[in-house]
Image 1 (tube, helix red, strand yellow):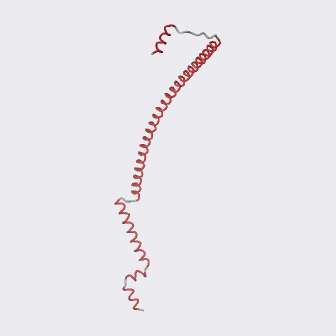
Image 2: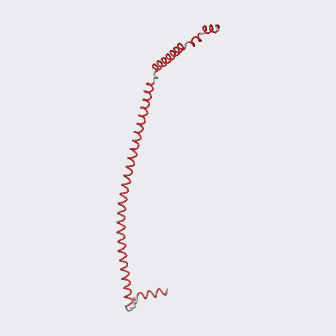
Image 3: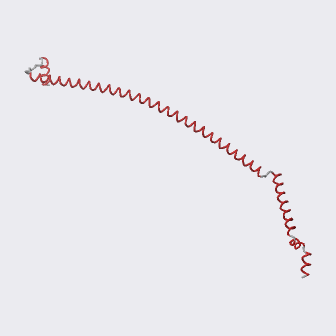
Length: 162
């Protein structure tokens, strides 16, 4: 067993294992040195979390500005389209008013012509009735034979012979 005791005293790792406080202190010093070196490295290279937040906020502001510009452009486009639609609607309304006026004039002309046709029909009916009554009076009156004048008879006989 003495041999074992001598082997442990000559090996430094075994000696550290027997003193856990020293081992823990050494590991702690190494960790603190590592964290400190990382913090110093980030501070000098500018990749600290605050710098990342600043970069992220600037990117967000740039995206917001770009989105705002796009919205303004789209709004202007919509305004132009709406104005064109209003202008076209005004033209259509003007054409509709013109068509209404023309239709009213055409209806007035149609009414006037219809009245004239009705008046002509009444006149024609009156003439028919008068013609019918004249024929009726003629039929009741004794028939008188009319003779053609002599010169018509001569020409008629000449024509018959040829």
